[in-house]
Image (cartoon, rainbow, N blue to C red; front, side, top):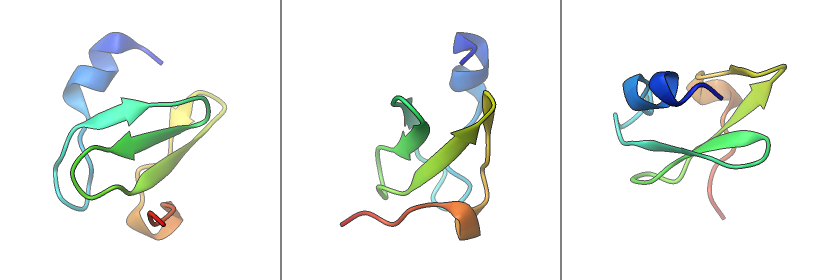
Length: 52
């Protein structure tokens, strides 16, 4: 993912910072994991994986 984009986008649920992994972006505050499909982050809370 583009590093500039990662500086701009935040978690749509709690506005926390997102950290990239292999195939998702994980919120450092609430723990939601958002999928990345074809290099496009899907930042929809309904599509996010809940922690645990």
